[in-house]
Length: 357
Image (tube, rainbow, N blue to C red; front, side, top):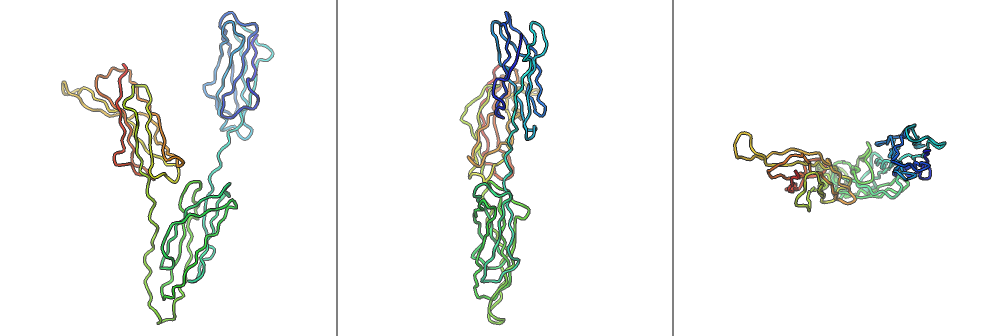
């Protein structure tokens, strides 16, 4: 008689496989294959087993089921394992068992930061004010980068600042416009939100306030032409390098490659990498001659370098062609052009590849 029951308390952790215990009483004299049916409405099953074997002389075995509850909704999903009818055994009263897989908690999206001017126009000698808003309000103080620039000469210089939006979700950014006493053209002050870690920039990512001059009466000074709009220098793009400590790898084995961004990126950086094999093969047109061929191989590309560490290690498997290759072969990775970074001067790492046939 064969029965089944859930092996762990219900519910189980969302990232652990479900386990069931299949029991036979009495123990079989020979290996006993028991058919099972696995159902999981709302879940995605991974290689769900259709049978389980109780070894000769044993009374039980474990049945493991891997499932993904990403699309199961707020209530998770229930996985049912049922004993099928078969030869050499009969089903007991407990012929099916259930276990609950809780839903996977999704990370909330980062706050979206916007900026608005608190007044459209101010006069030289007064304050210019902007309000930064993070939606939704951050769970902890959020550091945001902003750029200041101007039309005219109302601020000492264009610059870049870092401000902190508290958990209330808003922050008022103010700056006093000095009254220089000069007679000059009216201008403006603009503040823009710069993309950074832990937040995104909303559609209202820039705000401008017109600044009216308070120079001396007409004829008491000269009118100067404001310089063109000056913006803070663009941040330095990270330079990405690739390296490996391995000297060689055998066909079918894996080898680690490390990618490093310098300086560390402000947010996770997606890097394009070309993985390929180079091999010397005999020429089909020139006897006793060798030519070099290159062909790409599947690999982890693009590779994501996290901002938290500025480096990442990926493992690439050397292709096994099951063919005896008398020539020399090499496996390598090359950092290619992309957005938000530049490859280093020689962005290539290459090692020898040993034939195993």
